Length: 288
Length: 254
Image (cartoon, rainbow over all chains, first blue to last red; front, side, top):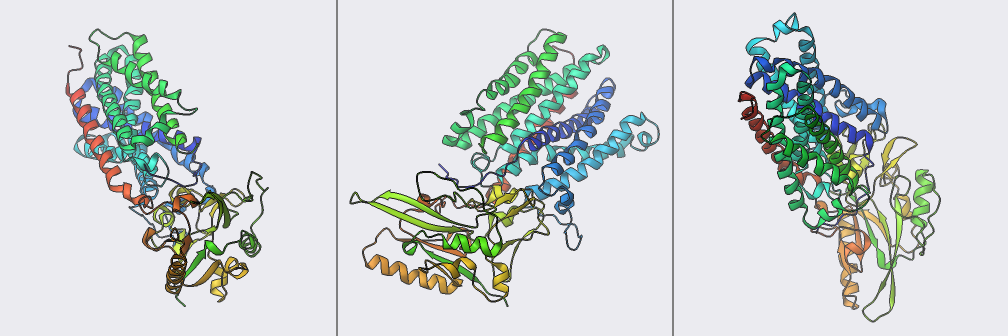
């Protein structure tokens, strides 16, 4: 069992919210892109909505991160050398990588947001067709990176739990995708004419939740005896939310009878709450 | 002038006077914080943003049933392969011309990734300045050809300062001397960990007893880079495939 004698970095609520919103922003962009590439005409409305959600979510992220710094006015030191102003990227430091991923992804999210607003005029016309597909596909790669690197950031330390597993990146990514699918399914279910999209999103969310369960198993297997401290203490009750946020929606998503609105709302709400609770547990458990 | 300096802290000579702590605080103008009063003589508690030397007091039962008091003046190890420097996203943490590890106050933005990375609980976050702070190895004194304040003040020469290679030699001689005298539990810490520490310690108990990770646990944050990214990549591929399968369908329930 690994031994740690480290101090806690005191990464707290700003970081929890950042991990949550980063997952939502990246996940929504990925889903919007895939709906456009692989869905049909009926999915266009929800795909557009995905881009309308992604940008507002990602805009909050740098604000949270900046507020968390000891010297907020030096946020740009993450990207540029404070002496020479030359851009710098340390590929072996996930925080350095993440700062660039956040910047680049924000650019994609902003342009796709404007395109979604324009409804086929101006920018929308420019981004229609092959170039538009390529553009969102590249943006989606950065979206996946944003939703996943946050777990890598925690693992690339010497903190207990975080650095004792390599699966947090995957876990946060799977959870970010499932949160995004749940939020979009909720909106799709709101509009009667988008029932088919809602069913597609529900099914995708089911796959993401299965992936999340698999990664939770990997996390606990890799943690071994250390995993005990993740399920003990005053954060332990939050696991009920995590479990409910995975198992109840999964049961609802994969049952054969047609979904009712109440169960759709319940499933989506539980996914979102469970995803948030998961981040609270992971972020705070190592630092208690 | 480029030099490779080092500390050698011989814990068998430490009398727990804390002159090192006081000298460090005076020279570096570190504020004091309220003492912690527990059941021992250690009212400093830990290394952090305002304590760059910390005299640890450990009571232990000896093989013959007596009580031994192990004291150790802890300090930043200025690792040759430094975890803090590895993760620092702003390049605020540099290696100086003395081969020591230094946090540049002008570049640090207080992200605290270094605190998460340091395996020795050395760096602390200073609320007043918003910066991560730790022992500078008295960078200013070294530049003026002076020895660090802690080593200068140590009355028993438990803290020795010099060229790292000289410190290694001194440590080896002392270790041999103690072993010959029958102190079989004496051991050297820091000649292998993290590529060789610039603060060597002569211990009389296992490293864990002093809050130092043993050789097996002295690992770098970057060990998790490749496998964490690969785990994320595999998840991304499976997630995208899952979404494609779901979205290609006609959407109706079977």
